[in-house]
Amino acid sequence: MLRPRRKDWVMTFANSGSEALAILAESVYDVIVSDMRMPDMDGAQLLELVRQQYPGMIRIVLSGQFEMESAMRAVPVAHQFVVKPCDHEKLQEVIERSSGGDSQEPDEATRRMVAAIGELPALPGTYAALVRALDDPEVALDQVGAIVERDVGVAAKVLQLVNSSFFGMSREITTVPNAVAQLGFEVLKQLVITVELFHTFADKCHVAGFSVEEVQRHSRCVAAITALLPLSKKDAAAASVAALLHDVGKLILAARSPEQFERVLRASRKEHRPLYVLEKELTGTSHAEIGAYLLGLWGLPLSVVAAVSEHHRPIHVETASTLPIGVAIHLANNLEHEAAGKPGSPSLVAHDSIDTDFKSWSQFLPAWRKMAEEVVQKEGRI
Image 1: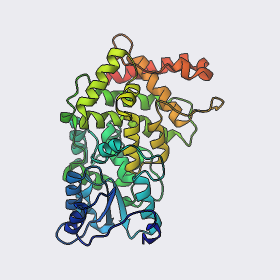
Image 2: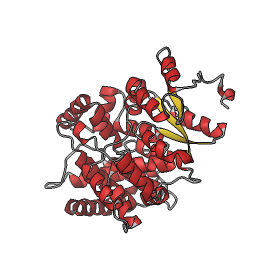
Image 3: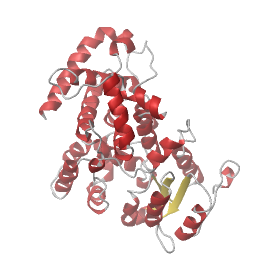
Image 4: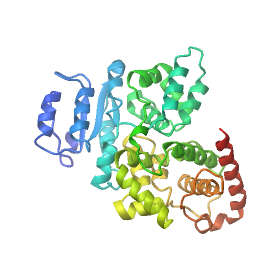
């Protein structure tokens, strides 16, 4: 099936998990695609060992719909799901996109950091609320959607799964309520209880001056502000998701590279310069690029991935009557930082100048600033 790519890719095929591990011990590979049903160990066991021994590898699982229960065990270790039977175009597309073949490939340090993540942080309160809600036979869909939507890590993972071919959706799902509706309560219950998908990395984020709760609060505010900005109807849903997920790279850095992230945070406060600028100077990448790479690896829509990647330096058209997604999130992000940085507000961080970046929209800035202040104040009372 993959023969047409033999001149582009170096490919090796194994008949079992143990054979695959023996091959990996001899050579370096970028991607592993594993079936679920195999001799001596199943796909979940193999990918867990690969995650431990070769954290930089991209991990893709093949599974039939009838294997749902066993495949759930692969959720914490797989970056993508491919449903069998699949044609070669679909499999090649997943491999190509996951490995960065359809865009500029990130540096090796970024790839290793992101590929080692199985899931993003979710606060303990969200986990408990979901378990309680899903145990209630009369719980309404909108109640579950509201719980999921308030947590960056949970929302990211739900969107990852619903947009993967594992669930066989015929169209992209870009809103959390639609994702919850498509997955259904039973699948969500398996994810929460059996796989412990919605657990937290909060205990691993021992970074002075960094708060997972603050990232969550900020992200919810940015999503709320974005929804009030002039966006085209076709972009509104994707913009809301991208706004909610725009800072997931910070969670990755805090969990996986705490000492380095703490140094950058300290330098940002001392020099009063934006965090992403110092990240670039000190590491060659930023939380925006790291977060976008992970979301792309998980198969989220390209419009969401691009908006997250460029939310500090968006490409925008000055004459547009509506804001492109990346521009809207850049604007909402900085409006929130401005509003939250006022005396008595949650935080004070260095950010880009809205007045400089948005000269053509200057007439609207006073109204947008007031709107952002109201959103921040409302969130502070929740």
